[in-house]
Image (cartoon, rainbow over all chains, first blue to last red; front, side, top):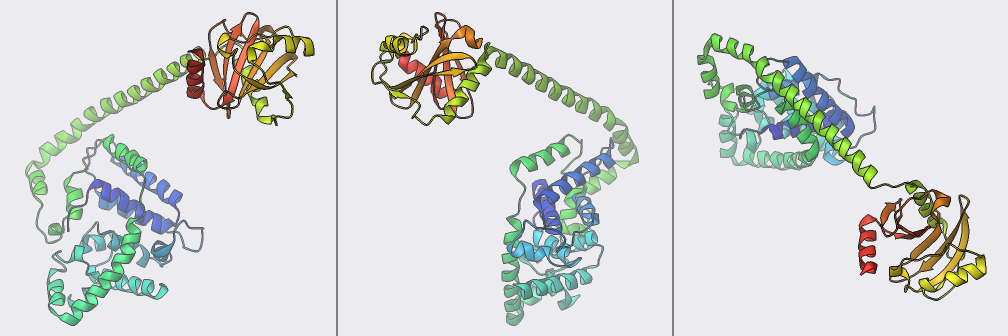
Length: 130
Length: 287
């Protein structure tokens, strides 16, 4: 697994937020909020950027139910958005290939066996829908 | 762990410590390998569409700028650790080992020093941005003032009236623009007819006189190579102050106008286009 660049992380975070919110504008606002709040927390301390923390923050934001708002998504992206949590975020992060499965489980707060089960369930749901 | 981790297999993850053994077992068995290939094929379809959702370049730059001005180290150990599967196997990344070896004292020094580095830089950046914005605003205001003249807004209003012309308003008069002085005087009693020499030989197709904000305006339609309108009226009647021989250019949404003074008469030439088109037109007719 190759190391992802900061740009990869930024784009991946946006994709996760877009799948969770279903709307580009919501995702754009959320990513600005996440970076802005994280940088404020860091303040004057010379902290190291932990991109995993940004993803944890993204997951801590209220997840929008897929039926509650109009969405900008279609195709497989819409199918991902329509999955329930935690399947939606887990398989989205899994497909983004930014973190290893163990780190992914850590971000999601599950062990690797639970992660495998969640990914398996999410994949079956996607296969059923399409 | 065994086959329970099978759903996690993807080419990108096959070499991670947690999945490497399972991946090699699955690849060795033809039936399992076939199942995995089908799973990968399905996953690739979804992953491809997911990766097509992207922030624009400017949005990414905005975020990069936030990070770059925050004094944070984006190539830090934590960033690398989150991406490095070796870390999950309990092995230290070299950067982490180095950082640990530096000791508590150095960390404290860094924490004390960082505000002194960060604050002046942020302040300087803010001051620089403020100065640049102020200079830009001043340059814009001065340039706007330099490019304007008394009565420019009236000319823009006059240009706007051209949007409502149908062509039927004009009386057909096919002659040269420079030969219409008598026609306007005899037909309309108009005394302020003056055309710059460079337009005198342009052939006209129609003429008319109309009132605009109390001023009597002579208007000519000509078609040298595109539809062009000439306007003539007493400069004082509309408060226009343009020196004789000097051209000022104004534009509204659709029309662009070139204005100059000919004795006490204001002469306006207009067509659909922009300032660059008018500059080119005036240069061409002035040759």
